[in-house]
Image: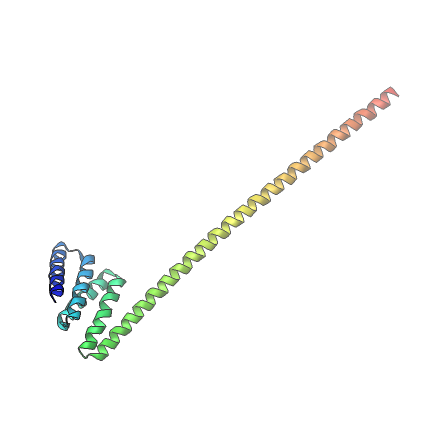
Length: 168
């Protein structure tokens, strides 16, 4: 029990300091932690008040993890208070929030996978185009050399024939 009292004092001090500093993001965690502590020592009214503050601040700042933490314990508080309909609604909101976060996470993961695939496909296509270009250049160089060699052979033959005609 002394541990809970010490923890409560520390958390209350943290809340006081964070409120003075207007450090809202850290306040979400402090309110949630203090609300969880109050729940564990069965001070349900104070727990509900603190968790509601954490939930409100999380929604205001659009921090889903803070909402999840607050809703999780709020559902338990409502259940312990015998407010089963409210507990059920809170649990339903929690499930919807988790589902939407999971869908968002899967969507982002899928999008990253698609971007990676597109990037790899583009790199492969570029590599193949370069190899194809080099192959065509090589074939063209061979063709030019063959044509040049043919012209040299034809000129040599023409010179020989001309020499034979002149000296014959």
